[in-house]
Image (cartoon, rainbow, N blue to C red):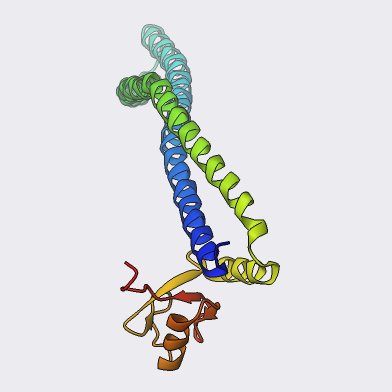
Length: 238
């Protein structure tokens, strides 16, 4: 029967594999999330640009109606110049026409600005939609690749989990509980090597007597600083 130390070492190796596989799976899924976030961001941007275009087109229509009204007033003012009877009335009509023509020029300038803005917005929307289309076209391929890798990782993960469950009953209940607590508190690995009298988990020196005890017997020993289980490689057996 394997010693508790060897069982713990094997369990720790399995747990490290499980941790690595979990991180690898997360990394693969993150690739998909990045693309999804890009699609969502560009979709929101396209929606905003469409709303800006709609709003600008509405403003253009409203300004155009105002311009037509101003043009009509100018025509009416011009017609008045033919029927006024006094010089004062004539001057008043001319002043009115001047103000209306100035208003017309202002509206025309505003219309030009709005039309330029509309053209720019349409170009921006076209660019955004092209980017969105390009990303969406590659999304399916990315998802297929990621799904395949995630499936492979899941199979490996399940295989190690089966090995872990088969090993658990062989480990002393108290030892396994302590191992689990250390792992939950400090993370993997919960069992580490001692090199040159130094724990490779917390990198603190351990007492020489403890190192001798680890070498001489198969009992389990813990680091007095981080509480991880310790082992020392027997160079004679390597």
